[in-house]
Image (tube, rainbow, N blue to C red):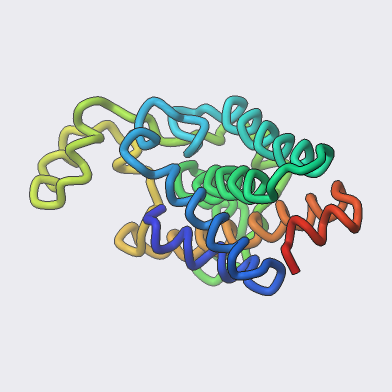
Length: 208
């Protein structure tokens, strides 16, 4: 998703739980995953190219860094905040870069008037139909140049990132479902850490 939506989602989900200085570090680490060096050849950052196992491992690694930070002594919580920001970027992009939203809507009786999306529906997460957009070089790089995007779209396969992404409202009504799912997943990831961190660790983590 575009950086403004990562910022908005993270603030909506976590604004009441973290200090402002912690939140700023988390958000910066989140949006830094979309810097040029992270946009390509890092499928685990964005769940591109059907890299689901790789993406889940990456999220687990970041979760491990958070726990390790508070197991040690004299380690700055900034390390944990940065790891959490990186984790959240992947978690949020999952819904914009995969067909999870489409599969969930297909499971509803009236897709345009469906209730609030469930972000962790087990049968969808384990479905063989679950897939994410493939990055085709160089066309998917040219996709980001708006004046030539219509031409690029004619050349990109339907399973490409260009066709499948829900990164902005331009992609239609499914974008709203991707946003809601990503906000809920962000809340889920924080709730999970609440169960893993001891109370004194959680105080340092939230900086409140």
